[in-house]
Image 1 (tube, one colour):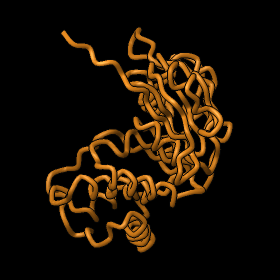
Image 2: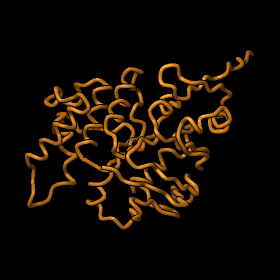
Image 3: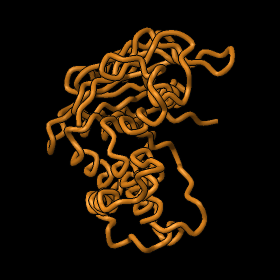
Image 4: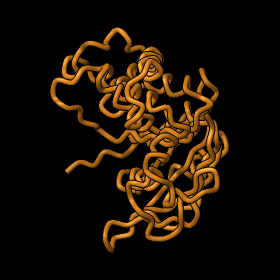
Length: 262
């Protein structure tokens, strides 16, 4: 369940407005890559390009060396799954029904719902610790429960590559850690996520891609690239970078900011 995703000189645009420019990135197979940067820097746009939700204005996205632009939609859906920001569930749908939709790419007119599909759904729910919620409706769940169910949907799809846009948004710290622990447990699948929290990204990612103004500034293991100079360039933030006393990963400590008075 590992796949190599790369981009070559990729440009992505909305109309005449180019958002991502000349992005050449190698996402390590079987690892977690996190894309980081300030709001509006192009992180989510890059992820949408990887999912073929946006056609390239230039360059290409390659999956195991093949341009995804030429892959049949159903074949690509079996290999690559995307969890967008703030997905919306239909009213009244149960957890089991929602996660079951992840099996659609594996079905044909001659192969409808099977025991294999049921097993995949139950395994996905078990992996996200939501199996006991299978008969509850989505509107009965807490934010943390809903987010884990959406991840279960992506798991049930059984893709080689999982793309997740801000999977921890609006969650408290404990639930953020729960969700990121779930992702770590999915390895060696290839996982590419967008996160806002640089410290969580440095803790959970094997590989980081730092972006600014639509361009990739640097990419590599967190221990190599998370430096005070990089944080200053990408986030416009003065800081010290120390070793996390628990995990040994880089920990960004912002400098005290001057409070302006009028």
